[in-house]
Amino acid sequence: MKERKILLSERDIPKRWYNAMADLPNPPSPPLHPGTKQPIGPQDLAPLFPMPVIEQEVSAQRWIDIPEEVLDVLSLWRPTPLFRAYNLERALGTPAKIFYKYEGGSPSGSHKTNTSVPQAYYNKISGTKRIATETGAGQWGSALSFACTRFGLACTVYMVKVSYEQKPYRRLMMETWGSQVLASPTDKTNAGRKILSQDPKSTGSLGIAISEAVEDAATHDDTKYSLGSVLNHVLLHQSVIGLETKKQLEMVGEKADVLIGSCGGGSNLGGLVLPFMPDKLGGQNIRMVAVEPSACPTLTRGVYAYDFGDTVGLTPLVKMYTLGSSFMPAGIHAGGLRYHGDSPLISQLVYEKILEAQAYHQVEVFEAATLFAKTEGIIPAPESAHAIKGAVEEARRCIREKKAETIVFNLSGHGHFDLAAYDDFLSRKLTDFALPDEELKKSIGMIPTV
Image (cartoon, rainbow, N blue to C red):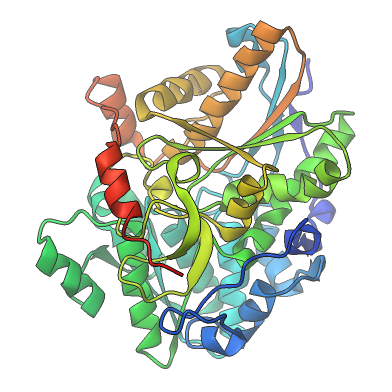
């Protein structure tokens, strides 16, 4: 029998996070205060985040120890398996070897729990009583809800309204773990009321939900804000994915030629590829590919500029690829990829051509997802399906070029709560969304001048 599953033992869980900030070829652009447009310091972030998280956000230390209390919770599902996709290879007729790192075995069903646990832990030891956050498709809200209940914290989740309505079981999962879940935009915050006054039927966006969660945290002394993607400390926590993958590839004598992750804010992509960055910068020929939806093409059609991370303009300005914070994405099923911006770290690496980006429409993404489900047995989340589509296209390129490359992608979560999306696809109700140039030009034109 072919060795399909590459396993590590519990003792092989990484004991330190890898911080890619230590190895950037060029220094990052500093975040700016939303009012003064001047570089911010740690104290400017204190109303939103506990100090241990702030220290990690600004750190350039290459290795950071993982606390024992965090390792204890991570050990519930880590290390995660690396699979060789023999059946998918056979179906495609490719000479490529395809591997996928499966993060769907966490309690919340996605990679997001890798960062929700340390964030909840650092909030707990800092005296926080409640955490406010946003969620798109619900993976992050589920992950933080689980982590908060583990550390005895209350949790309020502003869930993008279109996903709140599309994915009721994600909401129920969060509520089962004790969280309050609100359909954003709400009438509970100034930010939400402002949006509803402009568009009473607004289906919401991650940018709007972020505005509401940030306002909630900033106006309550016992509450902090938590973000599941984009920021440096989140990518730091996700590095356990790539660190484990490197060890698993070494176990079977393989080196990755292509690394692929879906990209909305950048967390699962960064988690896989960033630990390989020293190898790439050291001369190893590795391509690192971000795959995003054509309906929200931040890296492929956005501009690299300072912009707000939220819609209302409450967050610091960060240098990133952006479609403009006023951009309202179409209601595609990959709710976790419907964000106007991207991680500043990922954006810088794309700008400097260390990372590359691709975009696909949702129908072709679901075609790849169903092929994967039929061959490998796992029904992937719509977000993860973008990475599958990227891997399929790379495998087809290997056919044309007659190359036996090793392709590795991050299967960041399962799609058990996304079956309504598959129902739309199988009944041919799923449609593609073409983003008009005029709409994109309008939202980009509203990016603040810095």
